Length: 205
Image (cartoon, rainbow, N blue to C red; front, side):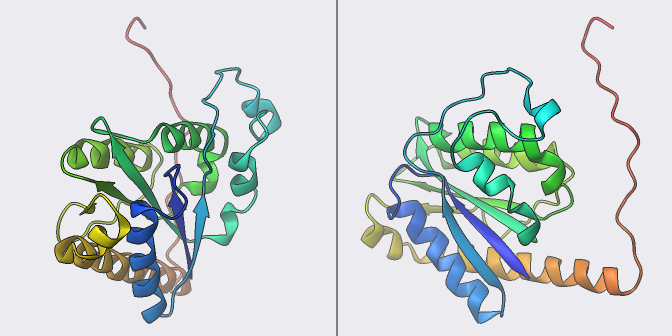
């Protein structure tokens, strides 16, 4: 089993990275492989060109397509983001918008979760925004003993957030358990759901 830890902070080794490293250690202790993937400092937003529906990938050349091509390697995903103005970072929002729109089918059925890092407030709003990507894409959402958030203005302060760090470790344990159950189900011949063709409507028809 392998879990993707997606770092959506413009600071590659800041507070969000610190939280994901705690998850990495917890997964490792459980025998689960992980990879921390940093989205980078500059991520262009979706241009709404619709080309990805024909090409199967985004027309923009950055790390979105790099990760999209590798999604089959991962069994689950944890998205990490700092909190800016009670929202996830602009980098992770742009990255996820394009990843899910161009490659959402590759993520469907994989357990997902998020971890947010903040100095003080806005964590629950950011947590809610990130979870919506999973809930619109047939992905089981993994929970923990509390909302997945860590507090601190520096990596050193985050490490002192004992409850936050414990919440991240519990999240890793719960995701490992769910992944193990999914794997056991496959061995027992339990097949994933077969979905109907999607019906897309708007409010005037």
